[in-house]
Length: 370
Image (cartoon, rainbow, N blue to C red):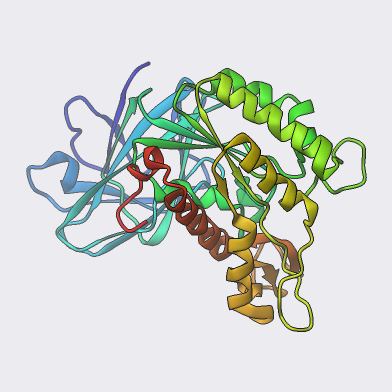
């Protein structure tokens, strides 16, 4: 696979780089550029350093690049000689690959992350209080460890059309350096049964490699009454989970079980009501019998939600008032799914679980402070 190098701005182009100017627009013919609805400006500060002296200001912009499917290391150079900058970057359909990049005036930062491209196109969304982009290098890289996620809507990458809906898997990539890829295969509405019978486990089996990891969280939809999704906790639920475990093990990779996160349901004493019941018991039993690491997100989320309380948890779950979010004009009262803060806190609980389980292959790739 080829490498790609882009120099953003309005002046001269760095040798070996391709220039992207504020008016560079994507088309199937050009194969790279900003979308037509993007708002992008450019400035030059002068000087001899071609990459740092000029830049694009992507106030609200989407950058598209057609490249072959695969795993890539993406490195971004950001900064401004005269102004403090603050840039928000999301990959794909809202994946949080980096925290907000705040760079003091006169300084520059190079940040990298790894991701899998699927569908032949890289999509990066830029925003922020004072965004900048100076340069970008994209290198094929098959070395990173891959952490696969199999689960439901509480895990998946919720699309931008639902903002600020977010699954915890959507916030997890920002916790890892470029030596690890979070490949989120979770899908809304799936149970352990429907995930397998729709062929999603087969797709994972074709991709997973020795030493990779797969985190498995199901339970929310296994209790549903329809035949397509329903499983019984101590029989078919365990059987479907074991099928996933077997696929991972046969690939020489490592399965990790994650108990289902709790819903926002409190009793009169403001304690969380367990709506998952025997599905949690069954997963804990399977972890013991199969000697598989377990991240007990149910227990961790119970403690978190009880700390925030009945009213405070509305800031974690997808609760909003009329007019608060453009995409939800009449407001939302959702006690199952999360907005960004809730997903971020749950991702941090997953990192806590990784440390507690002693998953050293993952721990060595954590960003400082995670």
